[in-house]
Length: 168
Image (cartoon, one colour):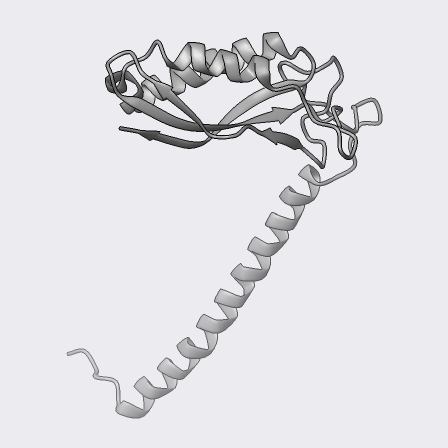
């Protein structure tokens, strides 16, 4: 017959298992940390000296070489406009024109906004409330307005933002 272990022997065996488990776990943690350091160290190492150190992201609608990552971006806020839509409803819209980073208005200088306001009224008044109520319709109108405003203000405006868009 098989011999049964005495409670003292069982306790002694468990104590050695408990002592080994923390050592094994600690050893695995150290090994994994070392592997992670080695793999991460290769990616974070020195770069090839021929690689460019900065990347300039060109803004569409701005002058060549204009950095999209410039610290300051300026915008011109247009006053709210009430526009009659093609189906008898009306739209109250407020738009901001995002200026290219290299365009800075002097203090007290105002941008001529009449062409932008005319483009906004002409473009949006041809739409119905049904079209503009859908997100796709608003995005399509915004893309069209952005293209037309960029053409009217070359190298000055790169984007438009709807800051208010209320239909009734």
